[in-house]
Amino acid sequence: MTLVLHAGATAIDFDGLRSLVTPEPTSTHHPLPHHDLVNMVTYALQYWGHEVTKQEFGITPDGARFYGVLTLRSEYGDYEDLVGLANAHDKSSAIKIGFGSSTFVCDNTAFLSDVVVSRKHTPGTKRQLPGLIAEIIEPLKQQRIGQNMMFERYKGTMLTDDRADQIIMQMFRRGIINCTRIPEVLEQWENPTCDWGAKTAYRLFNGATWSLKPKVAEKPGLTQNLHQLIDGICMEIE
Image (cartoon, rainbow, N blue to C red; front, side, top):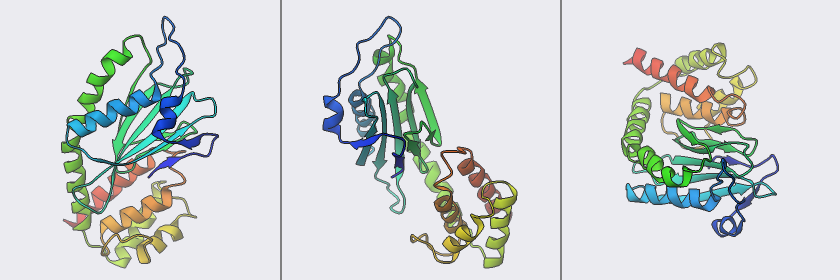
């Protein structure tokens, strides 16, 4: 899972979230209880046929800022889909909900996902949010199908070692990785940490993503740029 707590927040379970006190609303700011956000999103996911298999939550010491990641069971077996959550009672940020295979939520306020929506804490938020969440979750199945089709395309694109070397250098030239990451990506290509299958574009994509984990909070566009590069390589080879 990709919930990172290194800026003062600590892990908390759902019962702990329920025990937190939500500040009283003002005329313009109506904070949403953190556990209500989790309940709304989880209910919508289950209603539309998505199974939540893991939950991970973090909270700042004052209870004001909440971060969470929900893991969804994949019908395809070899990767996980993630839903990211963020909420704040201190007016520091809006409610955020994101989906993707590379969702990243950090207590330094970084929030990265393939699809992200946000909603301010206005007087009408609690009434309007369930409908907004439904609008996000309803098309999620098609998004997950599209994501799997993309990964299947990556898996079907075989790469030689020479071609992988060229692509890794393209990652460097495009600013996706720096020079210190080149040997890391190469090592993941040759001796992958996880079983990403044969020497395909999928294996190289995951190796690069693995190496980029420490950097995505600082540069949210890296994963999108990597997708664009790998998509282009697959088109060339086809």
